[in-house]
Image (cartoon, rainbow, N blue to C red; front, side, top):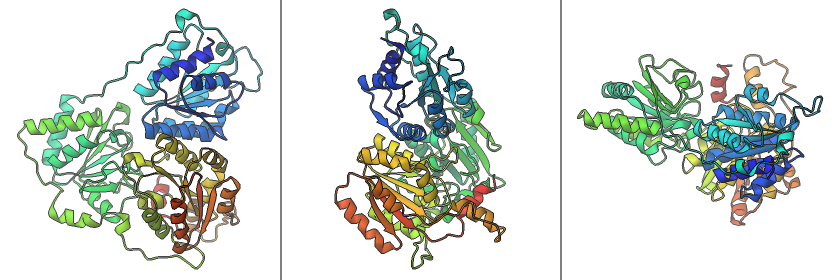
Length: 550
């Protein structure tokens, strides 16, 4: 077997889940080797889309996603998707063909190691035929055990080498065990919980596997629970669940979080988004951060206590410590008055002053009605932009695996690929995309991929014919500002969708959404592009908060 074939076989044997990519001469053999050994492959229309599909697939499935790209330009095309995955610590491997070291002056030559580092990914490479298996295993271990996005470079001359039979045997990968917190940290957190009267627990991406443990500790300590946006749905069904903390918090949730005297972040960065530039933390509030990485502790704000440990292990250990001390469960923040207030905690419960016009629909009314129409078993993907709060706030999801939020790099145009990757990971759920017209046009090539895969993808285009965030941000303080660079002619997204083979629907009023029910009843096997002509919201307040940090 040649190196390219051994790499593909080894990744398949290690348990890689799905590969996305654009195939050229440099990655043709390794991609086919993956397919031959049972790893499904989805051809994207652009490498950037492929990288984001693999990112979303890995987040939702819990398995390692793969990206396969051509040398040089294939890798640079994937840059934003790789950067998003790397910043999100997604276990992902990019199989990047690389020009041979002897190919001086090749059109495809570039510093691929330096490129990987520049977007915060980890560069690895296949060094020789004799080390090909070990090199592949090392990259896989780095992705899984360290939760990193790895760019595995495959030089063309190395790919073509024949692997000695003695060096081709597969190697197992010992997986890391959860990090247990130190005794002193457990005792210190227990002390803070004993002193707290109004504790709030906020779980982020690192808390997604710790639902039961965090809830058990919260019940004992009398804590309310919330999540960052990326972990939306984690505490569904819990009566003291505040929902999302941060820019997407409902007014009541924000008020209750601000009233906490202790905030504990489980696998949560406690960044400007989750804490609204710190305004959700009272001046006397103690702050605890639990994370697997020492460098993450206190990275975004000063903390009272940093605990190095796995979220589930930490919550379980602290509960054991409290019980061992003889501490009985207490009400804490879970009082009858708080319970009564939380009966209307959801955004759906807020009274709305409809600002729809004769030709444009209020995006809140649009989102609320779609939440009623679409099946509950859904997976919601959200692009970036002025609109993004509406699907995030109003479209409910069944659990934390029903929401895929690729926002670490703050790029528009990732939503469509996110929805496709998530749909591949969870074919049992209806994929739903919330995107702006800017992000839709930027990513529209991947609509053909969704059509080809026969995905019943509901693509909601919040269409204001502009880069709305910039319009509202730069126009807020200067009504005379020239907006010609960020405002565009009206486009017909529904017609564009039909041109790709999808169904299309133009929505200007809530009555227009009745057609969605008929589409769902038809047992669809192709996407539906909803071109929602939305009325101006005057600038989403959650982005106004975010721009303070720019």
